[in-house]
Image 1 (tube, helix red, strand yellow):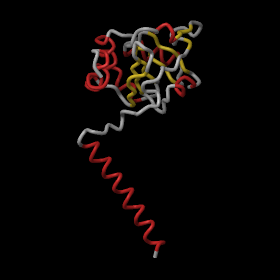
Image 2: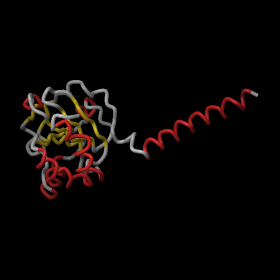
Image 3: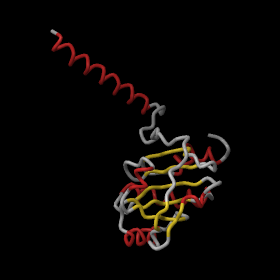
Image 4: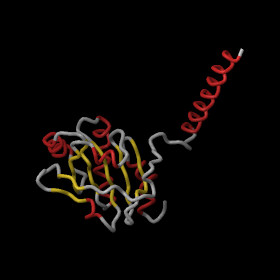
Length: 179
């Protein structure tokens, strides 16, 4: 008898958890794109990477110390990155803080062409050719966007294409003294 009861009970429990998550997504109390990163509230990973424009030049994230900044992980191979690009151009101009683009596992020539064609929202764009820095940031897919506070701690992580509405709701309050 137990051999029939156990799978049925497991199915009901998993079905209940799935239904609960769906209800929370529908009523807006759960956003599957907002990742509860272990980095939240902790120091942002530091990095020194070559720039996309000139691989002989290195960018050191330590140069951002003492001011808030945004890190956006993207790639030319990423359709969602292209979807968010026009919003990034607007947000970066309005936010008036450094936007660092980490071009993840990509070709520099393609990245340069992409930014020349679509516009460059980034204060600096660095190449993470082997993906090690993305691993340090806990990235599992592009695009992902992080907000780092002036104290160097990660305040927000968002997975998926950033929009102006998402920026206003999840990121901007931290820059206005709220959050």
